Length: 595
Image (tube, rainbow, N blue to C red; front, side, top):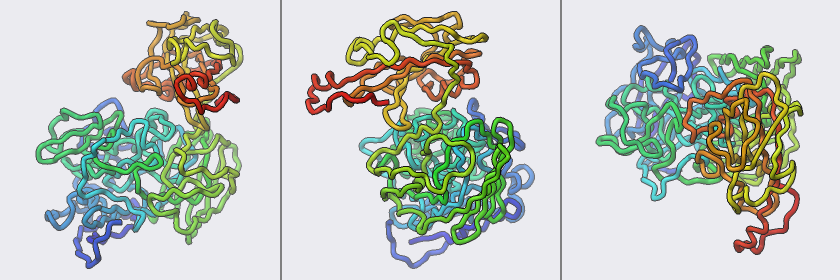
């Protein structure tokens, strides 16, 4: 096995230096196994294409005038073809933080899961997860195929691969699906920091958007990341600087001299929109891939929280995260005391302080690809954004009495960030076709005419400027499907006729990912509850996205601060009889409604 003998220890911001690349041939058997231009406030500008010449503020300490390397910071030296796989070059830029090695099949990338840039600042939808060093080394390293193979059936990431990484950035940080594991685009709902990342349930830092800020570090014409199928992800232009043309559905194409590759973007899919190359999908993720090691039980969403700062000691042993809750300051201070032990001090917004000590479990989780059953109170060991139900701010408990999850089941889409809008009881939603809690007539379903329900409402508060209507269903814990997203209904409108057309603005649905209404038409038997909600808003909704990208989550995120009141109408539909008529003779009898 070939190896680049870099140290994996991080050097702090005050004293970082980059080692000149040395290449060593070791006698081992081959085994497979946009930031804006404001350095004081760097952040992604999702609406414009950022220039590749922008230097992020966190890198200024490593550079001299005009972005030239400061003393002791060396550019990547030339690497002869045949000595080192070309895929290793962009990772070598981040030595000694990132270590690479290879055999005749894979390039292995090792690091501690922490980037050299800042983290967490700017997050407004936070599940109280914080960055911890991760053991992405040895058998738990990231790996890339050195000779990617085009897939016979390429796989899209839309609504798929919602767990784990889909790519690895040049700085060794994993890149997850732009959608979180509830299907929401993380960049749209305040989950990401200024660098396009956040922490998952294993307290593992990762990106959900293209790390465009790396382009100035790796240099123009080089990839900023690699998808886990082995194909490179370039920036916003071709390697020669020319504009992009002819991209496929996965935001990739083949060009002369480069072959197939993907391109990053400032909107969905942000990175690779799927896998042009062969990958193995298992339990909702690419398999195998490293496992994160968390020392804490699962944490919970903290409504009203906004992260303002994170400081890290030069040796990455001590961390201080500062945030506010509805304007009140709070913080989490944590440090390792050695031997896998971490001490956390939670300084809560209510003025209380709680101190907890956690001990990492031996082994740091199973090898890549294994999905064992988990004990109670054990957080996901795969980097994941799952989370348990809402809980007030403060530390996680020492023992959550949650049953283990069957690994054969898909990853639970947690209800942790399910938004509860204001509901005074004065606003009332009604339908002339069905009573609240009544059976939905078949003509309003996929077994009938697929008509929209007639609706009317009254009792909105003073100051209402517009209305919105959403229809959704919760098939299981935390999972959400939506059938109708309609907004910017004028304040003068108080009813919608059956099969309404031409009123308001339509978003998409999760049934067919198309714009417009999709009727209830579940695949399974038994009664299901569908919820129609009307929202009274203090202003019209502004969303600068195509209609086909406006999901329930996007609409809620865009209007949540303007919701004055809401009302809900619940209807029930049972397809058991229809399924039996279609040949499902073994369908069980009707029972209690599925929420």
